Image (cartoon, rainbow, N blue to C red; front, side, top):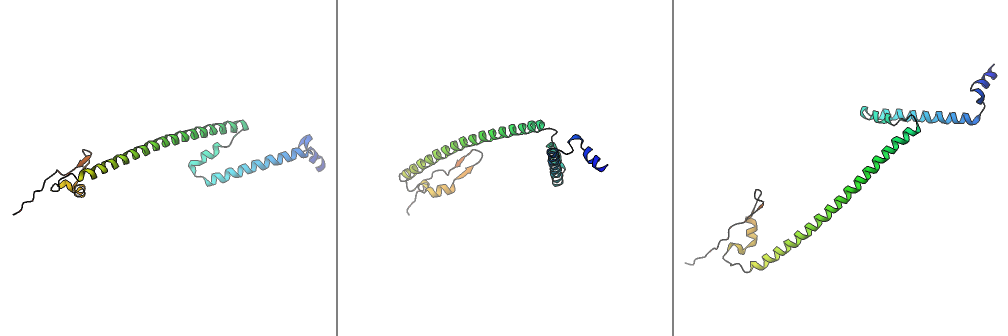
Length: 158
């Protein structure tokens, strides 16, 4: 009876080694997948457990569709990243150009001040540029500097 039972259990293909190997592989894959899901569920919190369960597919076509959508999203994200990087690069080039232009203007104004300072009368408060810089105040409301009025200091001899 046991011998007949061994031959009958599994039907006509009971002795087919290839079929037995295929069943073993399927069972092993299913067990591995189940263990991965159990481990993922144990590690994740309640919020992310739904996301893990979304990756369990009924068929290969379903998995392919889901992964294709994910791939499309990744490609869209990569494209957006490249666009942002190029936009950032253009802004950076623009800012560097503005900085260079402002540095040239500052240098021009500094040279003009150095030339004009020698022409200012010695008895005027504008003959000392460092003192003028210390006494100047930035006005936030108007967005400009408040510079002391020019004063000529006459010295009288007794």
